[in-house]
Length: 502
Image (cartoon, rainbow, N blue to C red; front, side, top):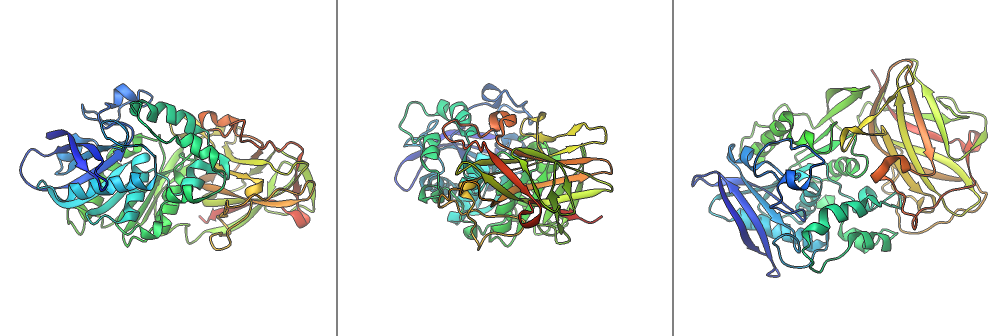
């Protein structure tokens, strides 16, 4: 492997971007896998991110990026770039701004015309790198031939910045731990401050949200059922709305890191890139458009599907009663908020797809934050958790959703029965004491209940149980004290679920 470090790539405004190039040690032109981030192209994984064991071994491993040794052995060049204003790149950092994406565009185009390049370039990587892949694809650089988007959001407001309209303060720790060390004291925008300053979905968020109608290159979008803190929604909505003729969706389980480097995943990535960068027209033959790891308790069963949501889905309502969920609507009633509701399966019940909670509430205040979590319990009452971003040691709920009541306005053109789409463009205070319908989007899930197992719906006033992933900034919260949930009759609160027939 040949390594060229600290190569300078000029951008359209002449700001130099620093890159490293790893390529096979011969003179044959090869396709290129590129990535760019503010995490530091030179930071060796074990020195910077000890919270995850190094999955793929090697002296040149960097957080969330392809392993240069593995890919150069298979005939690819790997290029890593420091984002503007970080590492060894000049300029001012403004994360996810249009300038950020334009810089990556310019790096891709530089890669496409080098003598060691075939002119075919792909973006690949986890999280940030996937998000940059979606964003640069929408700009349509001519030499970009494909995108591997592994756990990366597409809608900066709904997926990350203000989930359900509520400030996602996990951004604070991420910013301090992963961005600040790479700034070197230079001028930069502060994403946490910007997020706090923009409650409604305005032009600042629109600039940072992918125009999926402009994504036309082939896409391999890989989501994770347990990535309910940030990425899952974006991978699925990205796959649905991308204008690409060739696109595949995979939803797996595992930690935030391990699956990308697993043998099955590298084999799939290689087949995908061989098809669209290497010219092997048969490389993706036999790969279904949708591959899902169907969760069966603590185990999974891989299943190929043709579309999402699954075409055979039977959409049904589980009605909220007094501490229970039932297929039958109660006559009426109410219960204090927060509350839990349980359903016990009498036969196998698979729920795979997006969900929605239609919740009738009244409140003495003019606003409240609603946190929705789905949990599964076995026949002995033991919780069956989902695998969280940190692996099995960081369990998370099986499903999750959020909504600030004053953000309840729906976009009628984008809303579907199974996926409410909130416009987040105006504040609508509650009228104190008046029952009001809140339609809460619950991110997609896969849950299989065996007879005697229990599904629990938690309607909570906070999500402090999520640790670092909680929405608990004291300056942003609407507590919801004095709220009531209405049941049955004209106010039939219910969970809208995707039942998959056996």
